[in-house]
Amino acid sequence: MSITPQNAALLRKKGFSKVLVEHNAGLGAQFLDEHYAAAGATLVARDELFKQSDILLKVRPPLTGQEVESIREGSSVISFLYPAQNKAIVDALAQRNANVFAVCYSYHYMMSSSYRFIYLDGHDTPHLTCTSFRCFEAGIQAFLDGKQST
Image 1 (cartoon, rainbow, N blue to C red):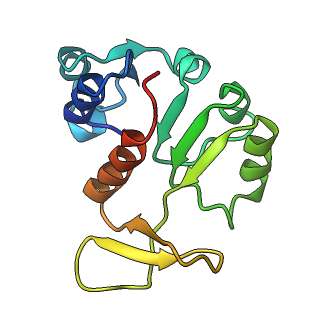
Image 2: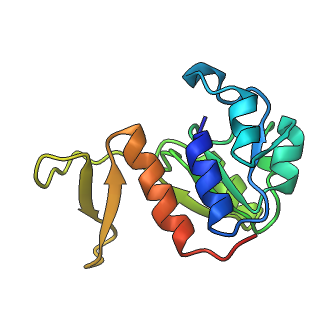
């Protein structure tokens, strides 16, 4: 489950025309389909989720041979992708022209909080990484704040 009903409602409030959630996706976190529906999300089957999503939030990396091939061409994927360990997945996503945002843990600590900053590829711009699920959602929200409604 990569989004809570509360954040699904927030995305709708921010102007997203649809927020799709897979049936029973929140059960492990005790979020029922009814919670998502009440928040304004549209509940869909897994295959429809992949076919219709412009921006896909996924905790685990998408699986090659099962999920990557179903991701819409040119869509965006936000996930704990672990690109160094999942080169085949990264390559498959590149073939789909997907915009990929790999959320990752950082072991380079700055102050003691759930927010960590690291420098990537020699760039001078710090990138926010997450060390908790709440931070994962906050990072997704920060990304989505900069995207146009779909």
